[in-house]
Image 1 (cartoon, rainbow, N blue to C red):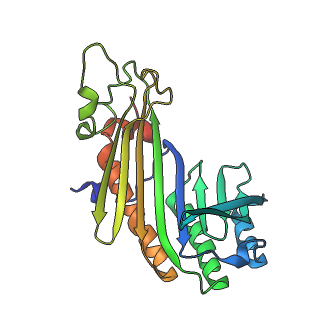
Image 2: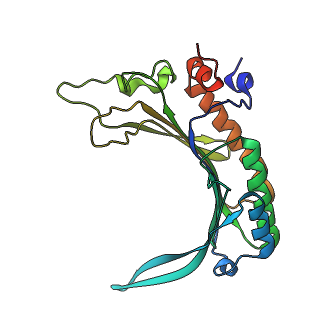
Length: 257
């Protein structure tokens, strides 16, 4: 049985997610969002992100033409909305919007909140044109153990080959990989390994990163956003299950012996 069929949309009692982000970028800035946000849009945001904290931001453009150097600075408002415990954030500005969950419940919640807001956004601004849609899951696995380079019990061995390198009179300070794939009509960037929060000191903490970033680049119709988001999530779920062992699943399910 394939991993995708075996685990489906598996939900664990515990996860190691530190950040889950869904984001849309626009072809061009929507100037009407520069200094104000429509009430109907803010009302949708406040349903799920009840703390509103707008803040000033700016974009700076540098131009070199005929040996002349010039800059252009544009000020705008960044509309930030947070969950009751600041466990999640919705950010909207004239160029893009995203949701970021630092305490992740499940995909159904992300889907509902992100899609409801995005549908409202494109109803209010029907001429807005998305140019990029992305969904990213960052797992930071912090597991028990003595050897920070031994992940055989938790991570699929095919991801661990570089951890076995051993050079005399040296010690590793970072072991990180970048693997990009094309999935029919979208791309996925998979980054994994030991990033080492103590870099450039030696690796002493037992922390392993599994970072999946699926995205579509190009003009996309707002009506296509839900189906792409589902595609992204399904592929990320499949790759995550392929990256871990049954031992780690027991830990996440609370059934570890």
